[in-house]
Amino acid sequence: MNQTRLLTTMALLVAIGTLGSQLIWFPAGVARAYPVQHAVNVLAAVMLGPGPAVAIAFVIGLLRNMLGLGSLLAFPGGMFGAFLAGYLYKKFGKKYFAALGEVIGTGIIGALFSVPFAKILMGTSFGALFFIPPFLVSSITGAGIALFIVSRVKYENFIQLKNEHKL
Image (cartoon, rainbow, N blue to C red; front, top):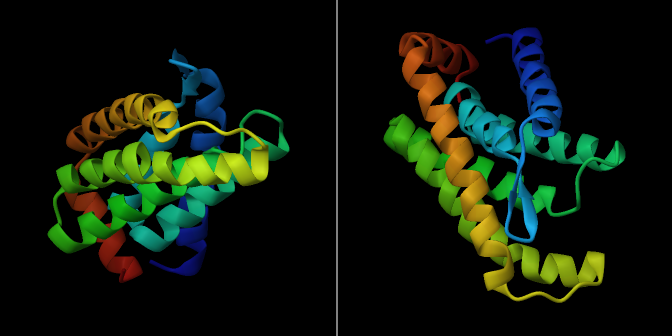
C-alpha cells in the first residue's frame, strides 16, 4: 500500500472513530461506553496492522480530548486494545483473535493501566474493579460490531490491503 493510500485509510478511520464515538455511546456503570472506538481498533488491526492501529487510537483519543469530548482514559483504553488486536491478528491471521486482543487489551490491560494513569494525571484514586467492568462492556460491544462488519466485507480486500502495506 502506498503511503498516500495508507494515510488516507488511517484518516478515514480516525474520522469514523472520532465522530462515531459521539453518535453512539451508552452508560456503562460509572463511565460511558464508546464501542465505535473499539470497532475502529479492530478494523484498523485487521486492515493495517498493530502500528497504524495504535496511531489511529492515539489520534482519536487526542482529538476527542482536544474537542472536549473525551477523557484522558481514552489513551490507555484505546491504545492497548489496538496494539494487542493488531499483534494477535498478525500472529494468528484470524479476525476473532483481533477482537479477542481488543477485549483483553482494552478491557483488562487498559483498565489496569488506567488506575495509576487516573491517579497521576487526573487526581482520582479508583481501584481496578472500578475501571474493568465499563472497559469490558465497551470493548466487547465494539469488538462485536467490528466482527459483524468484517464478516460482511470481502475478507480478501483486507488481505490485499495488508499485503500492499507489508505489515
